[in-house]
Image (tube, rainbow, N blue to C red; front, side):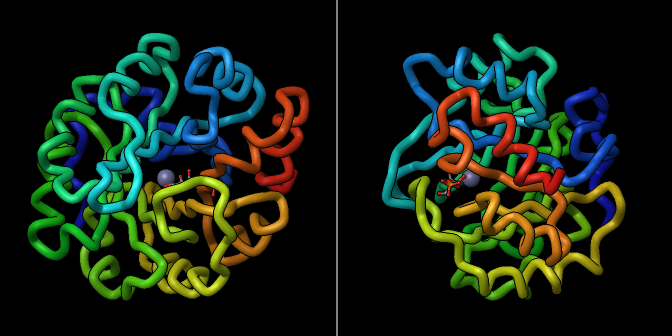
Length: 238
Ligand code: DX5
Ligand code: ZN
């Protein structure tokens, strides 16, 4: 099923839908300095980051609390043209999608563990009609079949390579088998994203499995600012 056309395509949408290059690199601000987020993120966007990834956790779907629409609004204020990729690790994403779209989110990814089949495609349709892109994520222990069933309706398919909740966990290589199954189903305007434990060490295997969009928190923000450009280049394989 093709995604519902988004009403107002913007340059931020184009980062995912018609990328100038692949792979895309998306630093996850979860490992950024929450006291100086704008200053921490600006050099990344000026030095090769293609988008910013915002990890939203509700303390229910995952055992942690992080950020809400207000963080998205501030990022949009300081980075008016950046692509903002909001990862909803929440039990009831339908309660929050409108607030994130109003706050300037470019893409909203929710999880197949909470929404499958027609329930998932209905929410994707709502998000598209409201003007944002939409992604579907699958956790490491979850079978990929329900994601494959509805993949055509999404702009981003996200393979989690850690059990979500925290940055800094070890990459789970077996999830790359899921990426290999998803990849042949995708159109050129769909992205295959990986999130969790992505580092210069694990990125080559991700790229080899067909992943074209890499999220990374601790491998980037865990380095001093002057080394982060090099980390992003290494993730990209350039
Ligand atoms: C996992 C989050 C990730 C996380 C990645 O719960 O969805 O985006 O921040 O962190 P690293 O790259 O450190 O594994
Ligand atoms: Zn994430």
